[in-house]
Image (tube, rainbow, N blue to C red):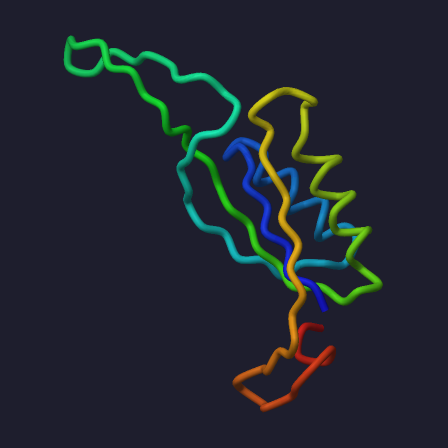
Length: 113
């Protein structure tokens, strides 16, 4: 099993969510995030004062998938979340040792399906 964390533009969330649902990977967790990367800072007028902001607003999505669904999941995130520009985001992949469905106690692969 693998855990995928993707930091994406908030505007791409609906498209990625639908893309994952279309390939039978409907389970994901969504968190608001902010951070900086290769994108430069930008200025914003707030209450009449110009401010330089270095942290961009992003969304983090997380999902745990079987090893067989890993490439399918990554491809869906890339296809629906990338414009090919700096600031599109990042995808991180981690090994997952075990998963337990709390309501039934089912462990392993069955817990993520």
